[in-house]
Image (tube, rainbow, N blue to C red; front, side, top):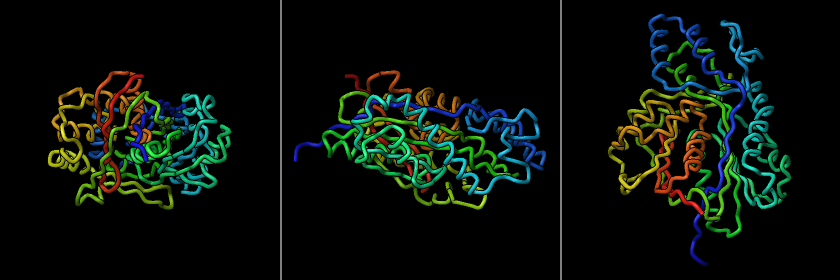
Length: 355
């Protein structure tokens, strides 16, 4: 057996639905909070969130007392899980197609050998992976893998798997799709912590090509760190009225503290990193990484810009950040980092490379 090959993210394309729903939610959510003091807290947190846009397939309603034009979310009658999953099935392929067309998949359909799909916001079978194969006429022999319910760090696991494939198969060309419809899981709740988590999330999709072709982002190595005594800080369960997510306010504190003590688990030398691609899980998460790694202001500018423009799109978010770095084309070493249930930290050391 010869030496292992290097693996590169050659291309990244992203897409979001048409409707910007951030302002609508910001204006509607206080009506669900009974306590005036908590309404004030919510409004202050909105101002600090550093999010301006989030997108959904649900068009915002023009009336202040209604959420969306489709009346998917009706006061006192929010949809059950089955309705939400039907909506996911009806719209997932459309969002994926938008990203895949941007990737230029038609030009390389005969070259794709593997397909990896990540999602934690909806499931059905035959699934999105098979729909993509059919929609684009990919070879019936394409090897498919679906990574489900891993949350915001799922894209890192997909890239890790793609790298293993490319390093073991000379002609492999891996298509990776990260798709989330996070706005499907809004709850009719007056709990301020839950509403603040809904404030973060939007819908989005990323599609990328990984191969041995020396172009784009070279994936050097990966690391996974399970943070102790934090398993209950991010949870995601299937409930009767959608997926029940808990995102504890303790998460940023845990990340900052653990990064301070576990820096070497992530990187041998933080100072050598030029590009920081941190999952934009929220302003407080980015602040925590900045504090924990003692990064100077501005080092997470790309992640903060993605957060501002799209919110947190779960597994698609880190790919949106990497896309911006790939577009920028500046050479140098980088570190990508994402967090999710566990509490788990996934990281990737990479190098920007031009042909």
